[in-house]
Length: 165
Image (cartoon, rainbow, N blue to C red; front, side, top):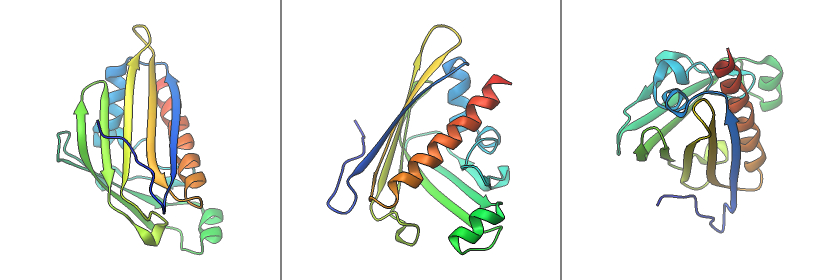
């Protein structure tokens, strides 16, 4: 079973559980279909163009997304221009539709990601029309962990609004 493992340089593991008002087959589609991923991927102030999403929903397949910074306020705080791309090139480690998706991403030290990360997303049916999603993600260093947690929380908020509409 692939799960994040703490290291000396990155010891923080995120765990977020959220319940969505949609069947798990529908929620799972939002994790693996590029046009659907583009609708919710990225924290507030970022967008992810559909043409910047590539998914091969199989073990060893790609799960690439490139967020684009749209917020002038966030750009100023980060010291980068609006329109700056933030790529995430993950690989599918495990997939069992509609109950499990596990991804891994290589280190990106320039973005504060000093270790290989593992993102485990489990989907559990809670009746016919609700899905409990448990995300376990990391490891992150102390500086990056709060940003990753905020990002996932905001993304899940976007997904929740999409599924409710």
